[in-house]
Length: 516
Image (tube, rainbow, N blue to C red; front, side, top):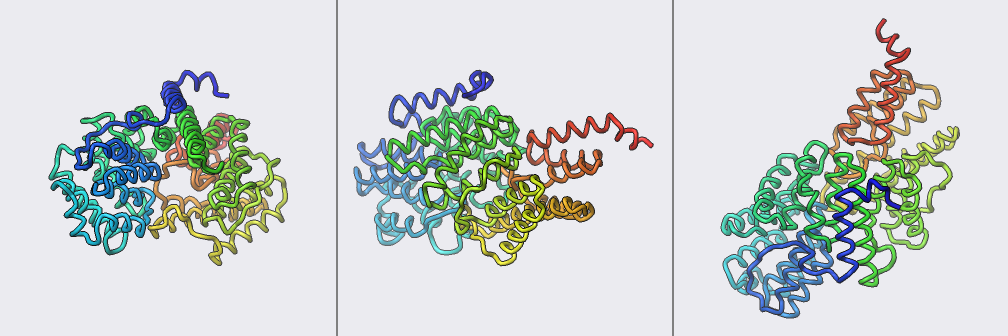
């Protein structure tokens, strides 16, 4: 059940309205946002085309593809319906693309770029088609992404009243940030999206891309305005219901994170049931964020009920996503709660990316130490060492197009390796080695960009370092690490609790020792 505070929360009331609107009727264009996109399609194709366009702005790629295909069926020569369907095969912020599928859609319009441009009825449509030809042309993805962004800048400048051109340019800019999170690029994208949002506060792309531009702990307050309205702009889009929590989580607004992700997860279940999909095709992403926020609030029983969904799906289905999600969520639960009564799920390790396997093993090792089983923890650490040394884990497919994301995955695994090494050393009584390995872990974490979601690594290194220093009765040094932890992950429960203990220590005998 939701707390009384949740029920009174204005964000909760907004998303509750969104859920009721979805439950009462199938999604309609009015529930996806508002835009104006003049085009040459026939009258019958307009509704599915515009639905596809609005869904595209909310990253509902599969549903957008269905809408664009319906528009093509109603108007086979509709060039922009082909453009829209091709666009659904590029996922800029995840650095994913299905190049062959996109090119196949364009081939259906015409055999060559020149012939396809000839099917466009207006200069504006030719400009859009020309840009997507660049996006799916020859060359490496980064080269194409940069050229596509430049092409969309040209479309925006040639048609200054076209808010969709500006929105897609903002998104294209974000898609050029292949090497971690480039703040300068993100702020350029935000500047463009801010202008669209000012002109049309109901534009789903403007609100969506502003949230992505600002969803780190430093810039999150700038995205709060968009976060508070996006779910109401596009309540029929599962992703739109989740996205506000990118800002809320970056600010440690746990009630709002909970409300947003309840709405998103329930909407994903409704969509799954409507389309008669398998049980596991609900939204693991929003469910994992909900699980994390509940843990930060100390609502462990509710978090456990979400974990049970992951564990049941992993037991019943062999899909890679179910095993990866179960491994991550089990590890998150046991690291946040210290619960030792839930055994690790049976996981096919061949499904796990480098950082996911490291997360899974770290949690097992920490539980073994908690139970006083140093031999078991050492064996788990040796397993992790071998996996990283031999490269026996699979790389993440989420960011398959960028080597930089593979590097991030490996860095997270190395942080967890250093952390578990430190904890084993501490259990062996070698405090110098423990501190040295925690120094390594924090140095590695410092190389990572600010995250835009639940703690990653699962145990922030600065937080663990602070806890260990507190255990070693070094409260002043612990404070420095814990404050650094809270800068990267605001209002995390463990860091706040440890910081409160630091304050208590410094008021007592520790303060007297420091004053001598």
